Length: 375
Ligand SMILES: Nc1ncnc2c1ncn2[C@@H]1O[C@H](COP(=O)(O)OP(=O)(O)OP(=O)(O)O)[C@@H](O)[C@H]1O
Ligand SMILES: [Mg+2]
Image (cartoon, rainbow, N blue to C red; front, side, top):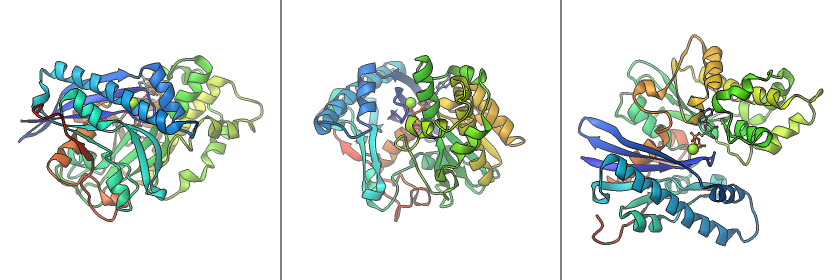
């Protein structure tokens, strides 16, 4: 038995999600899952650090310390839930918080003080999982398609796996993929906004962190002209591979077209139109990729309104959550980082050059060792 922990905090900056993944000869299974919402002050600082600001080096270092402490609390919770000791876990794969992502300039920054996390939890930590791919000329993203190929691939069905986090991304798994293989033809790219604009607009107008189940969007009417204006963004017609982030899709982006809308739509109409934007750009990407069946993961899988629209837009293609394949949609990303830690531990590559554009396969991640005697 080998256990690995995966920790993920994504672009929504909503929570730290963690899993314990146990690998046996028969495959892998999830032993425990935990999700700890961010402390509001840390969330606000991580949000502020997304853009250049005063004294950002020291502030980033302090935020990386606080993030390590938040991650350590999740590890302690996971160990308790799974009934494990630190010595039972081979390594923690920890994503950290992305504050800059500039593969074009050769760097990406995921804040996390990995040695502090290793010291606090007494387990080896694999962090900075994107830089080796960027050093090899890749985008450093997305990394999860390799894991999707491993666990969700099917011999006779061309599948689409859509993660609806802050940004939405599609993994295309060709039919010839046997589960367990890492085929060259897997594709993966960001389709555009997932929840980030829905969250930002909802937070501004209702104070709630997100629109639970899409209930507020349900009260509005989709604005065809506004949707068309947003869809004019060149990102949506760029060929894959492509990636994007909150630096592009944010409130300013949303408002540029909104200011031109006449008559001005009601806030709930804007929310309904944003939901349509997310659903229609995902559906269009799935159709272009000619997938036969779609599985959704990430927080968006819990938005009933969004799932309903995806089903309508993609019919007769079946749209389900990854729960149908045995993995809780909220746990998929964290599982991917546990899997990447296992790959690093075994000195096996973790990237798919067909997805990231890297020159070749690379062993991903920088290792922080625990104190002597801890493992
Ligand atoms: N019950 C729900 N109803 C509507 N939306 C939900 C619900 N639960 C979660 N969400 C949405 O999911 C988001 C969180 O998703 P998730 O944690 O997958 O994204 P993330 O942290 O941005 O991850 P990543 O960027 O790595 O994909 C929330 O911000 C919210 O918008
Ligand atoms: Mg999250």
